[in-house]
Amino acid sequence: MICSKCGQRAILSQRYSGLHLCQDHFVEDFERRAAETVRENDMVKDGERIAVAVSGGKDSTALLLALAKILEGRNVEMVAVTVDEGIAGYRDDTIKAARSICERLGVEQRIVSFQEEFGFKLDEIVAGKNEAPCTFCGVFRKSALNRAAKLLGATKVATGHNLDDEAQSVMMNYLKGDIERLLRFRPRREQPGLVPRVKPLRDIPEKETALYCMVKGAYTESRECPYAQLSLRADVRDMMNSIERLFPGTRQSTLRGFERIAAMAKGKWTGIDLLKCRKCGEPCVRDLCKACELLERLRL
Ligand SMILES: [Zn+2]
Ligand SMILES: [Zn+2]
Image 1 (cartoon, rainbow, N blue to C red):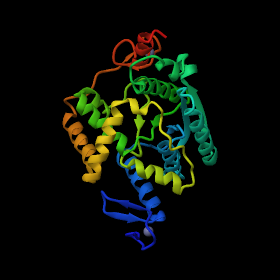
Image 2: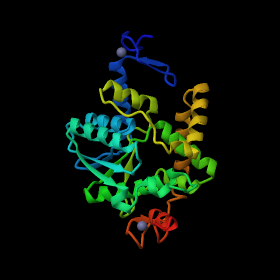
Image 3: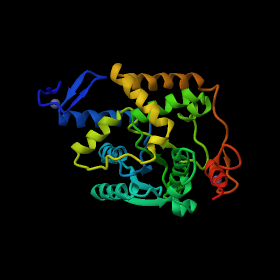
Image 4: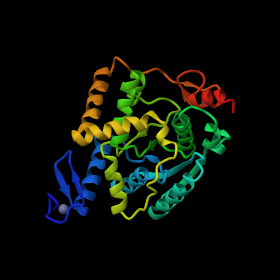
């Protein structure tokens, strides 16, 4: 298999584009597409301070590497935020990986833990419960990231969500019939107390974020979170992967279809004004935020 652009040995075959790419042309393609996503969606303005969520996994490592390249020479600051959920035997290794990529790129890193923020590790929160840990984890992680970003004076939070993640989230909201949440996925306006979130890798497939890390010499722990198999997302991921194998480009068309729906809803659905949580002060839909509501429900 040879590169469609130069005739060197190809390391990737993009079935959705029909291109074969060598190492150099793959890196060029990856960074160009991430830069396009950032530019077309006006994700980063000059003078901004971006809090980059860096877990140490492949997606966030690729995100930090790509942003360092894309933002080179621009008046934009980056600070890495690593959330330690407290998952024994999994998170310790990824935190080490996160520290090393931050050191390599000279990016300041701040670690925030569920233990410090909420008083409990995720392992303790889910022990003996029948509910999917990802629900708790996602809610608490979002809250911890938002709070850390505000403390660090960041104007945006960047996360490493890739094309697979995005297509899965859209499909999950369809399956659950959760239109409000679906539309909240592309917020149309800023809300007080909520640092706007951007996803520069949202048009890049998961497989390519892993390959990008490898090519860039950043070793990342490929093991997945021990709780991942317990969620609806795991089933949706398997389903989307088999459809993608049969019909390359399905992830992109899922996301494009959703963008069209979001555009049609513009003006009709502006979302509600967020309130302040009476317990922790974080922005929320009702008077108690989801994190505080879960903590109460768990009687922690
Ligand atoms: Zn090439
Ligand atoms: Zn709260």
